[in-house]
Image 1 (tube, one colour):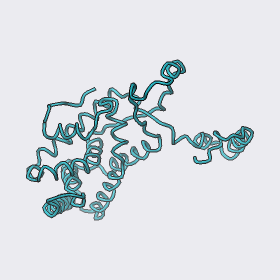
Image 2: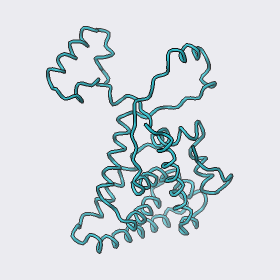
Image 3: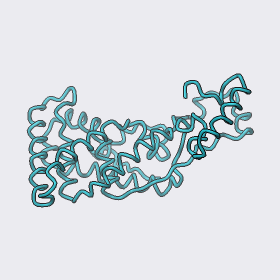
Image 4: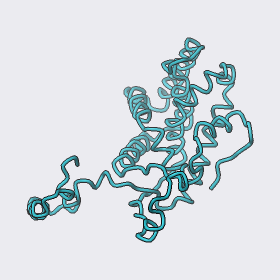
Length: 254
């Protein structure tokens, strides 16, 4: 995409490139602009999807609050784990709740809106980044891979514990205790797999490997896609901390 022909100054080159591309393959995917995956997208049904995502997020925070071992940690460690782990835990919740979603290309602002807002300060109209099609496709690929595992409720619970208690998060005061909690969760996950899948000896390693892909999903993508239509320019971590400690009783709702 760095040298996309559709933005070339040489229009004849772009036309020639299009004709040659059509002759190379009749696949409609390959005939698209090379910048197709960089196009920004948004939810096709934001009201429905954001509501489902908010419900999953509430359950995710409740899972953390209801763990006695989590409540025994220093408050600073709780916030560090929340910041580090809320995205993969939320994504596991999407998988467990079977939340699906579709996206569409972000509508371009109308010419009238551009004229009326021309020269106005950005502060007068807060804006945020829109997810790209490539990023959303990668996210959906991760979710589809987890769905193919068909995890049981116990597998989900122990896997969430193994993800939450991550001793590698920088700045933790009780890292040794957190490491023991992670090992305990992983051991419980491995034990529950033996009677459920005795013939699949590699399932434990495969689950942990696939779970590691969830950590690569940027928090900004999840926030912009599922929660920015609800919270606007508010800081997502401040809202999560409020939910965890019920500081204001504020809830995410469209």
